[in-house]
Amino acid sequence: MKLPALPAEYSASLVRSDGDRSRIALRSDRRRVETEFKNGQRHIVITRGDLGVGWIWQNFDPWLETPLDLRAVAAVADPSLGLSWRAVGDIEIDGQVCRHFVGSQVESGGTVQDCFVLPNGIRRRTVTYCADGTVGLTIDTVDATVGPPPLDVFDLPAGAAVLRVGRRRSEGRGGGPGSTRQ
Image (tube, rainbow, N blue to C red):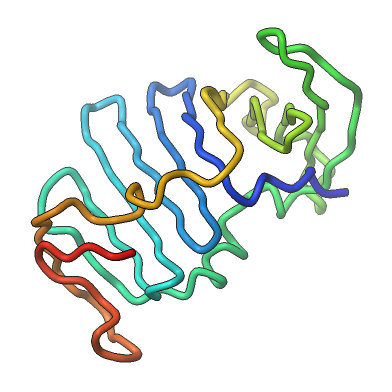
């Protein structure tokens, strides 16, 4: 069994028990993940399937741009796909009723994750366990909004310095300093 599908378009904040925080936005063939690490570093990854590029900003300029096939990335971007899931009931988290799923590795059968899924498909809480059974990491999804995020969150900031890396399939599909894409 698989987990219920995530909404095709949504935005949310992820709060991790290790102190890191992320803001994610998904809209058809566009993705943005902005992470603030507990050490103060900030990373932003924007993928644009419509342009065939990904941009990475690692707390300082320039933005790195690389050719990207979003379909290939999307197919491996969900680690829950590597687990076998079973539904075990419902539970309430902060007043929201969630379906509780237990995930295990196919080979060993050992429990490696609990996932609590809202009726709209948002994974409200995920708990990952260490090999000894102790909790390794808890991720809470908060401030989730189902529906398309604004298009401008998938653009580079005005005047952004861009360094192209990797080979391009065709010219004219990438960015440059100050470029914005729609």
